[in-house]
Amino acid sequence: MATTRAQDPTADSRRWVALFFIGLAQLMIVLDGTVVNIALPSLQRDLGISDGDRQWIITAYTLAFGSLLLLGGRIADYTGRKRTFLIGLFGFAGASALGGMADTFELLLSARALQGGFAALLGPSALSLLTVTFTQPKERAKAFGIWGAITAVGGAIGLLAGGALTDYLDWRWCLYISVPIALVAALGGAAVVAESRSQGKARFDIPGVLLVTSGLVAIVYGTTQAESDGWGSAKVLGLLAAGAVLLAAFAFVESRVSQPMLPPRLIANRTRGGAYLSAGLAMIGMFGAFLFMTYYLQAVKGYSPIRTGVAFLPMTVAVLASAGAFTTRLLPKLAPRLLIVPGILLIASGMLWLRTMDTDTAYAQGVLVSGLLLGLGAGLIMPVAFNYATHDVDKRDAGIASASVNTAQQVSSSIGTALLNTIASSVTVDYVASHASRGMSPGLAKEAMLEGFVTAGTWAAGILVVGALIVAVLMNTPRPRVQAEAEDAESAGHSAPVLAHP
Image (cartoon, rainbow, N blue to C red):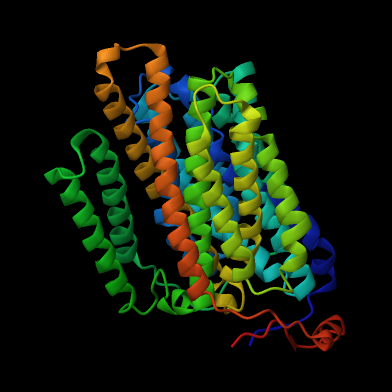
């Protein structure tokens, strides 16, 4: 049972200001995962990128982010969460500037990977700072509700910003925009965020880093190659098998080393394991939808980048309504799976709604409905997942617990985007080949692209439904029992239990 003590009065008065700058950093991280999406058609043409390789602009970021997050969390715990937070911000600003100046696919890819690497320092340090700053039950629920809303809505804001920047300036500004945000968050964080770190000397699990990173890269690359080589090719099967072996070796190493990058005790907890899984599932649906809808609106419907960004606004409103007005209030009252499972099923419904769409389907009947379902679902999931992913952990593990939920998101985004893009591209090519007698025309190209998106969306929905069933069984956490005397004791400056779990 976790306990918490009253905070220092000065820190108490500044923690909501600290939340603003920590939340700003989180917004930048999430925004940067999607702000490039709407610019993809423009930069793809500008840099001569193939359809099979276009997803690497997204996955280079999410893969570097996801594979290095656990190391970033451990660094934050033992070298100082505030220090790691600031290093991550300044590094992210530099990588963003480099990406904006890129004139080749390879340089842009390198800059995106660097962004992901610095985000791996920034993400867990930001969330762990939040975890150790807000410990009282009601304030914790409110803070994590805000955090979850930022995480869920940041992707949609990135799409809107990407549309405006691409239309009125240039796709390069989708990368430059992170520079001023990072600098503001760094200056504010340096002034108001308090330092915290775990006691003792850290031993960093370098073998674990190498194994998990190489394993994830092999799986994502193998999935990507399936679009051109086929799922049965020796190269694809070899890469997927190698990735599986490397990840199995990673799991073995983590159970043997004294200071593992991913302590087995964290994921052995059914509540935290369910939280990590639900966050990952949400990202599979959201990132897949962002990719498909962006190309559907621009390539099929002929929308401009800014109009495409505006088309995602209802999704943003749905996320805010669901997370801010609904989930935050129910979070201290309901068992987590009663919010998470319906949220996953709503996202799955949003992906299945793609099946109702045609090349001439009106926005209100197609993208709008799908976006609202996705937004409502994400708003139900994210505040709960982030709260329970870090709840009741020892403070020495705050950074690694925070990194684990971020890892689940980014790894799922990487593998999910690669898998769904491969399915969509393969189906598109097959559709064109099977209708070759009609002759290639703009109408056929649009039909083929939509067929690919619909098929990939159906696969995503199936994955989400299976995941929802697993979460329903795995996450058997009962309704939180917040004791009134605990809050009274906390306000009086005494230790008190927060949430009771079995």
